[in-house]
Image (cartoon, rainbow, N blue to C red):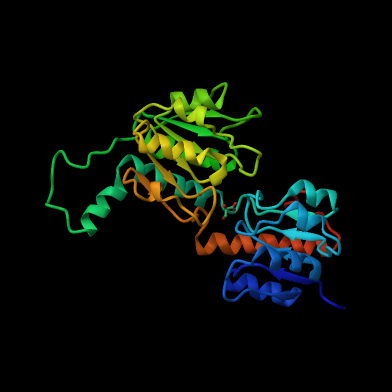
Length: 319
Ligand code: DGY
């Protein structure tokens, strides 16, 4: 029996590539170079399924193009704003994602950013590495503690809840949140506020956990203006979940105290204005980057492919 022809757009962990090579006529990307839009469009015409990830923008034009052969897209990532989902659905192309397996790892990175931003870890390490540390000081480089402070969660989904649990149980923070739909069990003592703006105004630290890919960012310039001057903002969701330009302006003007960012609006571009700020900790989209989790994500994508080609229900169907 001929095996379905699949293209894996980026390098995956070895166990996952071995598994895919056994079940499919699979093409891999050993050099891990991002595919150009032309190469992606070509792959859609020449394969039965695609295994892309967050760095591959699969547009409506690509999905609507004549000769599109792909019937299934198994995205390696819980977020799927890199794919035009409406166009995939209209074209009858199934799309799956990889939820759950990365929840804890991503919440850990949210905590790391919360701690780094509020304790000014980046500025302190930079000073030390540059040989500018003159020795212990009682008053230099003071950050702010988290105990008793308010963490505002925007988007109380799996990762938002996991971050809230860590912050409450491990660091004694009080939790407020905004979620579009009611949350039956936030898993922690938490107060739901009426709007994103209300959470931004109430919080000492805001942690963003809403999807990107919308026509406009969910966290707007107006929302950012409601933050306290002493507050920090952390984003481990998507760069375009927040108005990045407005955030930079608020940071540069000192209207908020700092930020921790793992995601950016136009990755891999990170604006120079952000890179210049010592009040900001910047990470290169590593929320789910552990051996265990990236392997689990790859296996989940493979489970979805297996189910699709066996005519079974997809474990993680998006459309
Ligand atoms: C996701 O899964 O959406 C992450 O951003 C990439 O690991």
